[in-house]
Image 1 (cartoon, rainbow, N blue to C red):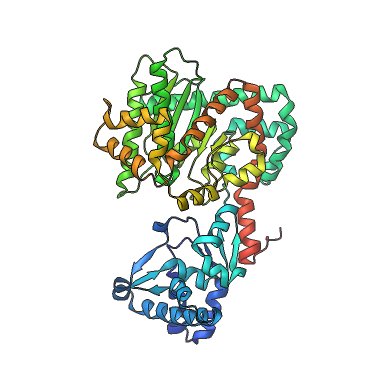
Image 2 (image 1 turned 45 degrees about the vertical axis):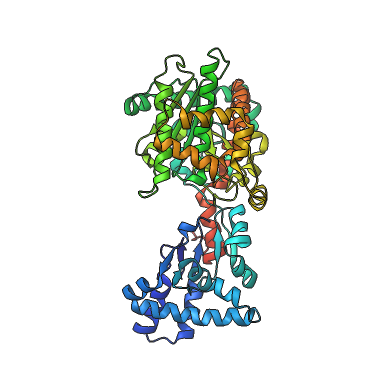
Length: 494
């Protein structure tokens, strides 16, 4: 049997498993513990501290007295082992302890007990070994593995985008439905002008369909011949929807200053929900809406710029959006995104990634090549170096006229309000996810993207290469990796 812990939320399954064996089945501790270790495995899905659950010891003891006793005994034995393995390094024992300083640490319990610990992209798994679980990796490196996330390609391609699925079937057959690696057989079509034109017609038809959805549900008329630039994911500072919004504001200010500016029409589409108590995230949503209302109702802009924030973003809306997307924004600060799966869903539908080298973007780059995506920004070592030397966001504000003008308008402009001033203040004085540090490079990548878009054949070729390279991100491959490297399960014979 295998029990897999998907993040820290179900980790109390470990002491409950022990309780059943000890109290109800009459097992001795060593036998029960051996079974627990061989049964449980743990996947970490994020390096964000708020997801590494910690519970107040007093609350834990009051609500779950027997479970608390078992956790304390697990901790006592584990700390004793760590002490012996480290030659009496009490600092390391304290850091690795499951119960310490009035707190019960779920992630430490998961790693201490599980026979396997994995991240969800190559980069993320390395970060876990180097930072979050560094002490554990030092003592028990054999536990640590990687299984890169995957997506249900039959849903996000065949079901969501039947026109594209028919195109693929017409050129390479239907084997890709059960073996996504066969998508690579599309690569010879990258030099086929007729195939690339057909791919362009499919994308346009999907964009026209989604434009009708936007008109019906948002009351906004968008230009189907504009770039459909998409950022859809949880609203969190590390995912940097704010970086996207700042560039939109800068672009709008440039267009207002120069109404005859030559620009490729651009439609920015957001979809996101904020956690109920995440006040700053809600301010960012309001900021995006404020910018959108200003742009969408400005007759001097026309259809050259539109901003759409999709209401109640969810899977059924995503199924309509993904086939229409042309740009996939994956712009988290390097070292903060574990993997992402929206990047894979958008990629398999032919969107080009605009992103940092973070999460699974690194592996997307390996699959399609840097030339078939738009990379920008600092790498994880760059970010760590800047943190060590002291990050001063105001320096970027002072030396970038575009940023200076945008932030000044947020502080003092006609659309400014308390919430927008709070965002400007955060950017200038804290900027925890280094929006200002990456802004110039991000803006340059947007300019490069727009230039490539002027050549439909070049764009469609890159799009097809992304579709062809997406097979490795199928959930079939991901589950096979879990089965063979962690659960010890093989395929069932037919």
